[in-house]
Length: 129
Image 1 (tube, helix red, strand yellow):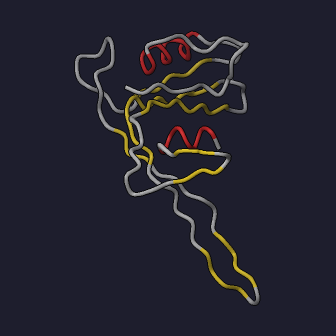
Image 2 (cartoon, one colour):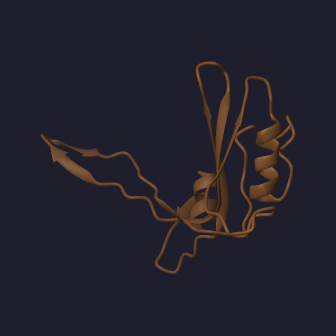
């Protein structure tokens, strides 16, 4: 829940999370990783974007209500990325199994800081900017 709060700009007080019309989601950068059967990994970096409020719909079925899966959307835009002449909106990197050279380079390009240490999280992270 904490990640959703951060991405959407929600507020939590006394264990209750709330959203309203004046919420202002922050600009964030994200990296997604995909692992292939051979153990190699591809990374997609999105350097600047905003996530929007989730959409959930409900349908009555018999005596109950069935809810859809929660869907969160985002819009990403171009941003100046160190080393590139033009602004960019998507960056890609790929490493062979057991390698992290390109992952680390992508983290520097997208977040301006190194990949989190093994003591941190391997799911990456984000910074506003």
